[in-house]
Amino acid sequence: MGMSKMGRVLVTASALALAAGAANAGGIDRSGQSIAPLFEKGGYAELSFGMVSPSVSGKDLAIFGGRNSQNVGKDYLSLGFAYKQDINDQLSYAIIYEKPFGADLSYASVANGGSVAFGGTKAHAGYDELSAILRYKFNDNMSAYGGLRISRASGDVTLKGAAYGGLSGYNANFSNDTGYGYVVGVAYEKPEIALRVALTYHSAIKHEHDTKETISGFPIGPVSTTEVSTPQSVNLDVQSGIAPGWLAFGQIRWVDWSEYDIDPLVLTKATNGGVFVKGGGLVDLSDSTTYTLGIGHKFNDQWSGAASVSYEEKGDPLVSPLAPTNGRLGLTLAAVYTTGNTKITTGINYTKLGDAQPETGTPDVARANFTGNSALGVGVRVGFSF
Image (cartoon, rainbow, N blue to C red; front, side, top):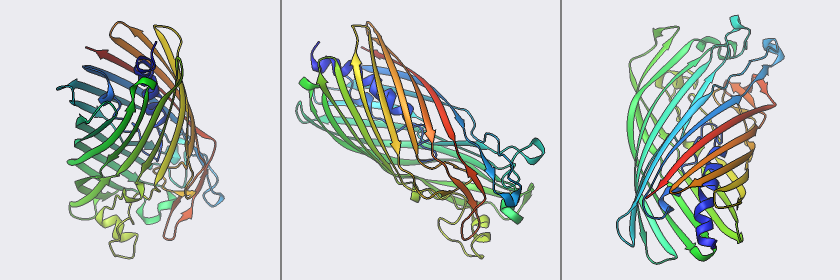
C-alpha cells in the first residue's frame, strides 16, 4: 500500500482521536473545530456521535464546613455532520456541522448533601455551528481555503450558595441568538509520503443575547443585552507517513478564552462597585494551548487504528465555579473498520483534569479545592466515500 492511500485510511482515526481528546479542553471546548473532511478525496459524507461523562468534584474550604460538592459535571452528547464534494480539479467545498463549545454543570444542593459554598449553582450553554468552506488547490502541494460560519447560542446560569453572599439565588437567562464569523487557512501536502501541514484560523463570533436577570425568581432589572463572543482560535495540524503502514500526527490548538466574557448588566455592576467592567461578570477563563501527538497504523485491508496523547498547560489555579478545572492530560485510542466505501471509526478517551480552586469575590478568593478529577469520552464516526 502506498503512503498516499495509507494516509487516507488513517486520517479518519487521527481526526477522531483529536476530536475525542478535545472534550473539556479550555473549560468548554468540545469539538476541536476540525476541518479534516475538506481533505477527503472525491465525494465524502460523515456522521459522528460522541458522549462525554465528566467526574468533577471537590471540597469546600473549612470556613464553609469542608463538605464534598459531589459530581458537578453532567454527561453530554455531541453530534456532527460533514459533506465534501469536488467542483473541479482545483476547487472543492465542505459543509460541516458541529457543537464546538458548551457547558453543562450542576452543584448538588445543601439539602441533598452538596456544597455549602456553591450548592444549587448550575450552568448550561449550548452552541451549534454550521460552516461552509471552499478550498482552492494551486497545485498538488499548496492549497488555501476559507468560508463562512453561522453560530446559534443560548444559555442559562444560576449562582447559589454561601460563597455568593447576597447574590445567592441569582439567575441569568440568555435568549437564543445567531452570529456570523469566518474560517481561513492554508495547507501544504506531499501525497507520496502522506504529509500534510494545515494552519487554520477561526474568527470570534459575536452574539447579542436578550438577558433576564432575577434573584429567587424576582426581576432585578429590565431585560438587557449581553454581548458574548465565542473565542477566536488557531489550529496547526501536521501528519506524515513515517514507515509503510505507519502515520504520525499532531496538533497545536490555541483558543482565546480570555476574550470570552459573559457580563450581564446588573450582576456585573453589583460585583464591581456599581460600575460596568468588561470581564467582571460571570466567567473568567484563561487562554488555552493544547498539544496533541499521536501515531496510526494500518493492520490489514480492513482494520487500522490510532493512539494519541493530549496535554493542556495549567493556568491560574483560581478558576470560575462554572469551569472548576485547570489543565488536562488525556489518552485517546481509535480504531477504523473499512468495508467498501464505508469507514466506521470508534474512539475512547480518558482525560485527567487538573486541580483547581473555584473562587468568588473581588479580589478573587478561593472557596473550595477540586482535585483528582477526570472525564471519559466515547465516539463513533461513519464516513461514506462516493
